[in-house]
Length: 160
Image (cartoon, rainbow, N blue to C red):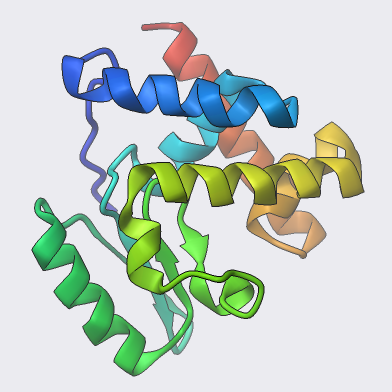
């Protein structure tokens, strides 16, 4: 699988860094953990879409909002098992609890607000060690694997 990396120190990302801080602080989240989740989930691509169909996962990285919206509509016509945006908020898992459209989750600020809330709830329910993995999966072995990936992303970011 090929991931496109974006330099998170670029001026474009200054607003994203501020939004991460803004959403982390009231929830008691560590911004570096959220950045690790973002890198793991979407390779830091704001318009990323991930879809799971018949056991096969595909990731898409549209460059423009209009393309992301059109692709999201096509994917949702196939399945509701679609991860949306920076934090890959899964539409199937959260659609009934959100008063939003799937297109709303393509907005960076909305995506961060929702994703940070989901992460906070996972951490409160499961504790730090398991909670990071619970953000991604209810399955213990997948939780452990995901936590390792996020920790690796955090370590990679610190090495920059």
